[in-house]
Image (tube, rainbow, N blue to C red; front, side):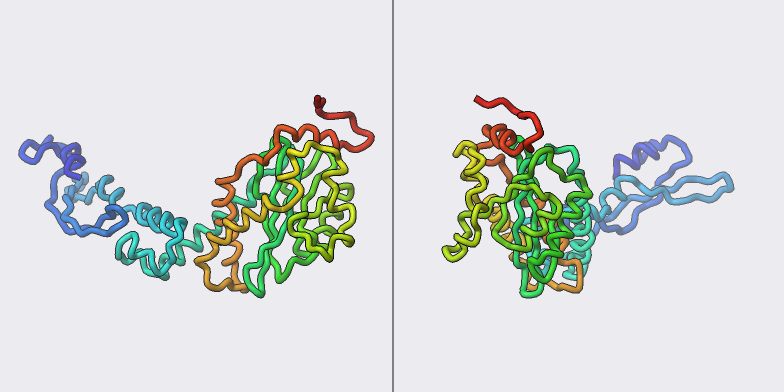
Length: 320
C-alpha cells in the first residue's frame, strides 16, 4: 500500500505535485492466510476541478480485503473432509467462518459442481462401454450412477440420478439425460450391470441391441440360473482375457462408490426435500474421477470393438 501511495503522490517529503495527495491514515481490515486482520491503512485523495476532493480507493487495499482468499481456504478445508462446524478451527476464527456462512458458501459452490458434471459434452467421445449401478444414500434416497469407458479405455463419470430406489423411471431419466448430452455408440454398446431388472429394462429402451454383461462378482448363487447368458456375454464375444478383469464385473464403478462414500461420510443426514444430495454427489464423483486410470486390458479394446460391430457393418480394427 505504501508503494502504491508513493506511485500516486510521490515520496512523503517529495510530492510530485499532481492531483493526488496524502490524506493521513485510518483503521482497516484485510485478509491474510484466511484470517481477518486489523491494520492502519494509508489514505489518498484526488482534487476535483471545483476545488473539492474524493478519496482514491487503493487497489492494493481492495485486493487485500478480497474475501475470495477466505472462501478459497474454506472450500479447500471442506474438500479435504473438514466438517462445516470445524472450518473455523482450521482457517481461523472470523465472521466469515461461521457455520451458517460456510454452509451458504458450500451450497453456492455445490451448484457449480452439478453444472460442471452435467454440462460436459459427450458427443465427441467414441464410447465403448457403459456401467450402471446404484448407491444407497439413505433410506429415502438412492443414486443411480453411469460411468462410460471410451475406445481407448479411459473412464469418465457421465451423470447420476436420484430417486427413492433403483427403479426404472430413475434409470430412464438418467439415460435420457446422457443421451441428450450426446452419449452414443458407433457399434453395439457393451453394458455392465449389477443385475437389476430396472437397469436392464431401461437400458434396452435406449440401446435395444446392447450386449449386457451381468456382474459376476456380485451375483449370488441363487441368481446364477436366472441370469442366463448375461453372465457370459463377454466370453461369448471371444475377446482376450486381459479384458476380463475390467469388464466381467462392476468393480470399476464399485471402487468409485467406495471413494465416493468417503467423501459423503461427513454428511450425517441427506434431506430429500432439497438439492443437498445432488450437490454432494456431483462434488464427490468429480473428485473421485480425478483418480481414474485406464481399464486393465485397454490395449486389446480393438478386439472388443470388432466383436461389437453390427452384422452389416465392416470390421473396424484389424487385430493380430
